[in-house]
Image (cartoon, rainbow, N blue to C red):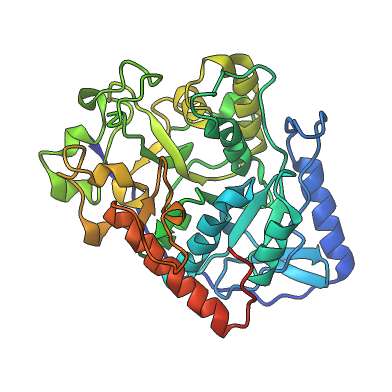
Length: 384
């Protein structure tokens, strides 16, 4: 059984309204009053998020509102891409992701969501390239599963933050190890449920959108669940009709697992949903094998919109014998470099590719284009 997500993407112009400084302050105060609480493991408190303190300058962003920045009053878009950054290790990925979005002609800005673990030199690198940044708390449940076999999952709880960003009408969260190969702005207009007014009203079946996880476990990792096998994978069900797999996704409500991958999430932020998410995290995190992915797959089982693989094309799908039966290089819009090594780990001193996975070379080539463009723009080489 398949599910069609309903796409459209009209052009959304950037408005030009300029209002008083005091109005911007009032809007900021109103947003902070509306913001739901978040667990902040850095501070041991329950803070609110500050509004972004950098200007949004990308042309073509959606109708916005004013925010007070470091150098004046700026218009803040209501529709953004976001990506989480907690350390310098993923910074090359983020910078090349931002470049690939611009190259693909996206009309929307990428906002870097950073935690206190992200150092000042990283923020300087973002500022040098005009990438706006916003601090978020580092989320951790009070009692967490032991992720010593996969420590990356400790950071993944913070990828739930987009649900809390209620100053935006639409957020599309991207992992920093992604590469955009074609414009996918239509995700900004994908139909989702309106944010519910109360928890009791949260009954819709289009809570968020995401791609399926591949549950084949091609590397045979022993700590993965025993039911993560090819016959339970949503992508396996599409091998018989690879053409439709480019535009249609398997329905998560009828699959054996209905498990999403958290690399790309299309979200209408909501205080009510975020409260549900945090409560569920605190109640059952010790049993969640894959952090945010487990939480959202369980809490909203059968209630999320599945996207075709082309929007979150896990690099392993292309491997022979995994899901190469459905993979089409020319149809992929967004490539996800899951697992290790990352493409930026396979560059020699001359910037040349040293790996074996052909998709990594695609990233290396775009990264080289980024660096060449930065040199032309006079951006100093800071090693990222």
